[in-house]
Image (cartoon, rainbow, N blue to C red):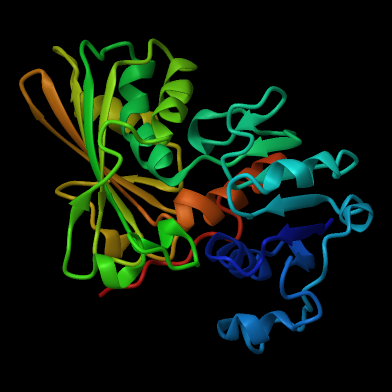
Length: 314
């Protein structure tokens, strides 16, 4: 039976990407798209890329109507989701792409490859940096071989800052530029440590995020001390059955995951130190595509349903 879903915040970057995936989903009908500022406007007038694919009209938030759907996905700015959820208590499933419920009691943290999501009804979709880094480090924590601090440098694209331009983060400030920000003090560190702590002993984590001159994507370099363990074997074994994670030789590249829900990983080992490289699309595996993966699992569908286009190159 086709699942009927609503998307709140459908015109932002993460929301519009969620709409894009779900309009082509074989087991889902997008029944409602909600915008706090564009109600009454055709969706394809706001998102011209969808012209010819939908005749949906943006609606105001109506918790009673949304609660009648099979699932509601919330793609609002951080801080805006919590009050909406409070009005959606009767909704069968809620998936929150913001950080509002990532540490909330009763919510399942939706890092798909490491979470039990079958039948879950309240799912907090992980953050983009958290996804890229946790996927890289989790196999070694789960195996119990991490024997020291983990150090990470990870670069992100400008869409991670949202659709509204901000003085220090919009693309003209990032173009032909590279800089660090929130050095050793990024908000995703507790999130990463939380998911790793569920798999074993969470290591000390030192993280430097970088603002990169690209529009979308995250590339993380994670230095993981693994003692005498064979890092390549552990990484391969961890993701051998995961269709949306590719363990590959050489280096991942952002262009190979752009516009997809894939995560590309590779590992290089020098004695007891492993350098694990991780590439995702911050709006794909780092947000909307992972939300669809979570929805699939919640509905009892294969995790990659509706999410298998071959990446573009070049």
